Amino acid sequence: MKNKKILVWFRNDLRLHDNEMLVEAIAKSDSILPVYFFDPRYFENTRFETAKTGVLRSMFLLESILSLRKAFQQLGGDILLVQGKPEDKIRELVTQFEIAEVYHHREVGPEETEISGHVEDLLWTLKINLKHFIGHTLYNKEDLPFPIKDIPDVFAQFKKKTERDAIVKSCFLAPEHIDFVVHTSWGELPSLKDLGFDLNTDTIAEQYAVGGEEAGLLHLKSLLAADADIYLKHSTKHTPEKPGFSSRLSAWLAFGCLSPRMVYWKVKEAEGIFGLNANFNQVLLGLLWRDYFRFMFKKHGIAFFQERDLEKDILDATEFVNPALEKWKTGQTENPIVDRYMYDLNTTGFIPHTGRLLVATYLVHVLKIHWTCGAAYFEEKLIDYAPASNWGNWASVAGIGKDDAKSKNTFDLSKQIKILDVAISDSPSFA
Image (cartoon, rainbow, N blue to C red; front, side, top):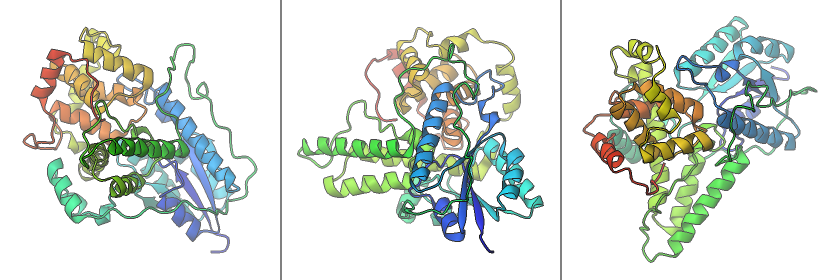
């Protein structure tokens, strides 16, 4: 096709490095049109009386998109910013710019998958192909030692077989040259107010992280350099894990500002220089857990939640305002460790994995409140919210996930209850 143009639909993949979708679009077209849709559905309230996206995650999103915009501008182009639902706006775009194909990354959450379906149906009527890419995982599905339908439901088995028999591919290089579709009005980056936030009532504390690919790569470099420095101060290669260690990479991974493969290979590079490191191992384990939950959602969909009356339980849990739930949300439970973590969550948008397990245990097993209420609140507050990991972890705490309770990697209720009873004040370990 003469002058073939491809629309590149960015979602949670806000980076240039290791972006197969972008690399292939550049290779298969004469010019590309990068687009980001500010979908109003992600800024609405839920049935749980929570916001789909809180103010802190919205700030991180805007910073990440601005970072990508600047990267494209340095290459002589830009990214088109569109207000509205993709399925409502994309017809006009593909017609106006004579688009031949649309590329996007496939998601696994039911809501995200439904949006892709709407867009695909619309494009089908226009005889335009929506090409799917999978760039959110460490392992490509075709490189796994089993088809999706046969992926082990037990994390320990998934980890063992994957680490033994699968390969992590090398990263795609960031493009150095891009031909962009000619356009004169690329759209304005919305403000928090434009997205529906009342800055008089939405408290914004100091963020623990700044959004964007550049910030993510700098954080990764700093993290590995810090652990290398710790290594040099110890005589053994097997250095102990730092007390309170957290990689804090999760927000950049959630928005796709960092590729999990980039993180993996940078860690492996550091290991090759400095030797084994417990903190490095924790980073790699975190990447595996991300893959596990995404592949579980791909395999099972909503059936991942093994709860017979899930819809009824949600209706019962949201029928009235529960004072205990409100105290949990605001950190007023009178359990010191729970309240401290909830304060951190509300003011920074982040708590480490250990803290998430503890506050979830308290909500589900002490207060006896349905787990989906907590998962929905985390969806609003977490900067690093990712559907599969968030809802999968909450299901594990509630005991309804697919991971076998006999697995040594599964949620340990008795351990969490003991910690809550003691209400320790020591800093937790890796998230």
